[in-house]
Length: 299
Length: 199
Image (cartoon, rainbow over all chains, first blue to last red; front, side, top):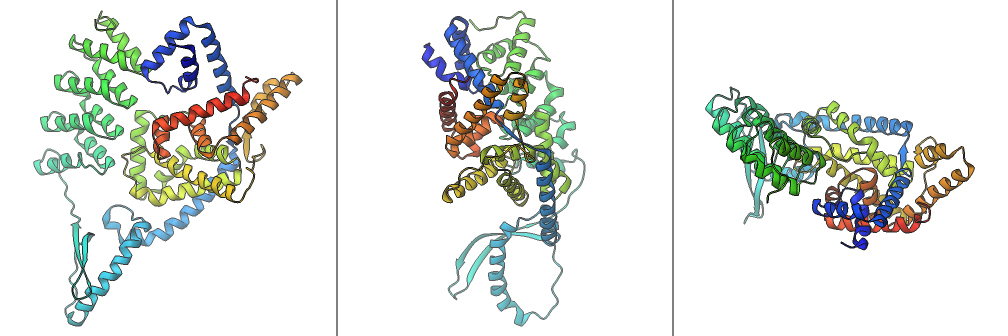
């Protein structure tokens, strides 16, 4: 390990942006190299000098910004009010940006259908349930018009207990909705008191192992907490401890794993100590290994 | 500022975003307040002009408000917000370059708290020689920062003052973690050259 390499990575070392292996190399080198320790001190002094160079907004400026924003938001909200009322059934606000193309399309559709319907429309229109529509595809019509194929989603409200099969199935489906992490989080929240059901526990395990959103994975650990001794749950937690890229999720995983110690855990902890970049988690792992009279590494 | 949020805060933030998406104004204001001081500080450090920083603040949060409905929560809110703020700041810097304006260096006054002038001088005030050195250091740092490219300044501000991880910075700037790392590395080298005999 050359001093030149160490000096080149010291800035990233101070920012905590080196990999675990690189950081270990730097620590190892610094222990016996005085000139690199001096270089580290110089780097620290540079950091401290830069820390002091930050401009921070005054309280007055921040207050002005907040008040100006609040005023603009009031205007925005009034402008959007009629849209929200129109679309209230859709359950979420509609962005004006999205409405522009939809509006243009609506004009085409009104022209097209209007020309055909108006002359023959003698009966009053039936009230229809609100429907969200989306154009799937469109193509020119041989008569010179346009043919539009729409997907329609009709809103329907269901209520009942999670113990009911139909409701449970829908909540489990929502827990896997790929396009809405908030919906997945809410679903796991609702399922949490029902973790005794194997199907619901599987949903938590699936979310823990494969959900792309760290908040949802954390919620899954919360749901699995009462089952920390279950072998399937422990195996999933071990996988998370070794591979999840979110430090918060790994922290919760180690905390739950060490609540129920077993010899099978030793191998996992020994692997974790080799690859874990976070100091807190490393400490937890080390302490657990010490408590179990196990060595720090696998030999 | 520490850029990482705790697991509990992450869950609370998702709830706030969901509520704001449903039109809850209080939730939106709460969300703004979690980040607005840092956003304003970031814009001010990058643009060195309180007026421009104020415009970026206003435009950034209005864009967040208008587009929150389409934010899908599969990326971090902070990264999404900083992508908006960074683009606005870079637009300002580009416009400034086109107009051949000199960067308007913010004066410490009603609108900014300059730590270099306040904190460091306070500690050195008993010794005129140290005060002079401290003032000279502050001016050297500003000159060095002004000589960085807009992209370098952005990466440095996000990492050093906002505490964001390089991976998130890469995402916010639409580039890779490796590119952000190289950029930060260049900045630290330039700063070391500019300030070497002072620190």
